[in-house]
Image (cartoon, rainbow, N blue to C red; front, top):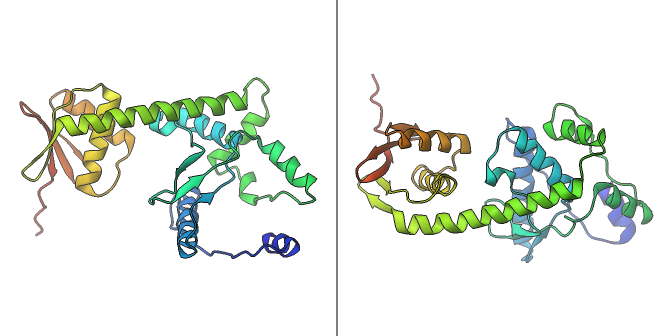
Length: 248
């Protein structure tokens, strides 16, 4: 379909084929798409990548994550200017103030048929179920919900700024790991712990796992996360690699 439209308009295009890892299909497919597009932009020395995220996307994401008990970072909406995941390429989202029906009408006015991805009607996916639920009610203001997602993104950025200061002032190196003397409120401390785990373990932890570690340390109890062991002591909270298990 895209090839036919581009041929009509005289616009050059390229089809990028990707391999999607097993597991969470939509999440892994999203990561594969971004990776392929970022490589494509880099090969052509392009300055940025633009996507068509809109207000309905923002609202659906916020409401789905509310249902999962996500924290501020999970609830934060995307911004007009961001970065491609796992890279530094600028990511532009110029359509965040538009609704899905408005964009479909604009495409139709241009004499084009809006794309209809079959997965958008597959009830196995959370987003599809949320989209159908929102379509059945008239008391939820989608632009207002999307705006709230933007406010939460601002709040998350502020927490990130505070967490960077907390890291600078309260985190230090110790033999085999890092030590943290928490001074900030819980929301900031969780970000610091997540960064500690990422730095030492090489992978970003799940928010629920970070919260579990924080609660245990607050009670003076040891906890494990990834390949790390966290302990509470007089000098603060220590995070070190777990000792290797002996085989045999």
